[in-house]
Amino acid sequence: MRKLFRVYLEKPELAGIALLVLLTVIFEIRSDGVFLSAENLRGMLGLLPEVGLVSIGVTVLMICGEFDLSVGSMFALMPVSVALMTNQGIPFIPAMLLGLAIAAAVGFANGFITLTFNIPSFITTLGMLFIVRSLTVVITGGFPPLLSGDLPIGVFTQFVGPGGMIRTSFIWFVVLAVIAGAMLGSTNFGNWIRATGGLFDAAAAMGVPVWRVKMICFVMCSMLAGFGGTIQVFRLGAPLPSIGDGLELQAVAAAVIGGTALTGGVGTVLGAVVGALLIRVIDNGLVLSQVDANWFKCAVGALTIFAVVANSWLRWTARRIKVEG
Amino acid sequence: MVTPFISVRNLHKWYSSVHALKGVNLNVFPGEVCGLVGDNGAGKSTLIKILSGVHRPDRGEIWMGGRQVKITSPKAAMKLGIETIYQDNSVVPTMSIARNMFLGREPLRFAISGLGLLNHQHMRDEAMQAIGDVDLHVRSPDALLSELSGGQRQGVAIARAMHFKSRVLILDEPTNHLSVKETAKVLGFVRSLPAQGVTGILISHNLHHVFESCDRIVAMARGEIVFDKPVGETNVDEVSDAL
Image (cartoon, rainbow over all chains, first blue to last red; front, side, top):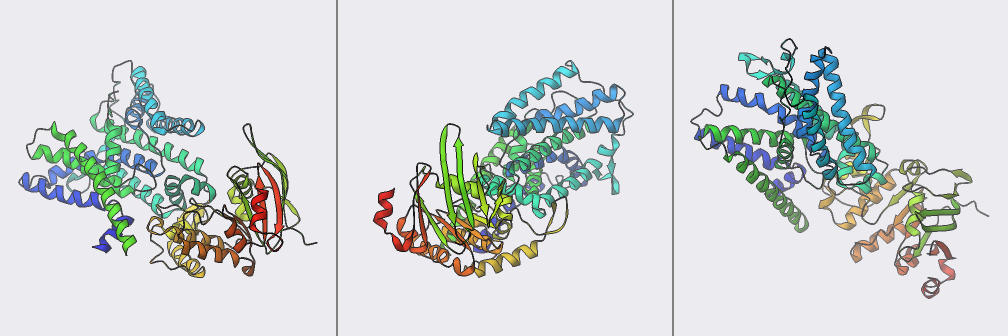
């Protein structure tokens, strides 16, 4: 038991993984085996990358001690910009790169304003949430632009693999998650992110370039959000200026369910993936269990509160054992 | 006359309209432990933050071993062999001992322009070695700092400073949150610095601690040095009066 608590302190995503297993079993039984069927998994894994990418960015930024509420708006701005640019005759790849550059610019603005004026990123990015959403609607003139049919969007959405089990978006997601996880866990830059969020003054006093570390996390978070939104638009085929509304809070919920601490310094990329997956599992599992789909938000909300309570209780208990042992 | 190891000359620092340091002159000689005392706001912390590269002076010079140096960042201070231990924020509580030990100076297996893959095994081995060297015992290099007691945390910070071969060790109120036993251990360590070839600067509120472990006492008040004598030639009352 004591050992288990000790492992938990070093791996905060464990509670999320346990919940994931538990819910999977429950939904599998309640849905008479439909939940884990190939067809259902195919649908679920097709949706996961979109919110999953946003969650990874938000998680890494939260570990660094900052917050981004503008990801939901960025989720719409990048795909809408890409659609408009390709309609103007800009080739696909430059349009994608420009879209990513716009996302990077928004992330840079978030970071620059937050750090220069030393204000909470919660406020900066709350403002940016409105600004970016408004810009998105303004540049479309209120009507979703057409997504040209001859774009190579299959690179992001096509079904591939044995029996067309997974979408290419899932491969992008896995690759980016592995890169982000390796960055956070196995590089000196990851060490700096964790230290900057864990105890800012200590990191600065040890010569960690805290300003640059935070800026890079802001930019990465924004780019991942834009990319996630672009994948969703390519899947749906319609660049709606309203997509991603409320997504920022889902991404924060995913991060928190995955064991990320709001206070910074604690969390993992695997936790972000588990959190995003849990939200998808609940969404899908409720439908398959023939529960009114309007319970979805209620379930996610309850899970978020439960996860944080469970995490702080586990942390407290683990520490108490430490002191006694 | 021995060349001072660190020589601070006419150092000034303003925080907007507050004149925190008003022309401070201080010599610290090789192999001595210098105790720096003074009330809150006397300028002690400002002085050591300048020496450790966290703040930059507005005017004045810093010399080390007869050469003028510019301490423009914490990294620059560390390169000069100046390591600093703060009362409560030297280490990151949410990180492991091994990661704290090498924070900002991680051993890498390969790197592109300073960024690269950590050498975990090397970090863990060296961390255990360094901690053993300062006579501290911990379960594992993967233990988080938040699992340790205040004294053990300071022990990790001290082990880190010693591991990186500090030539000057600045301790800013290192015993503030410690138990009596742990305080004695840290002070004992401070006393042993000269024997290890390290020059020390101990900042403390507690005059008894300073008398116990330092060779010289320097007192600051209102941004100036108001008292400077070897421990043997003064006593607690005289220093108290000066403050």
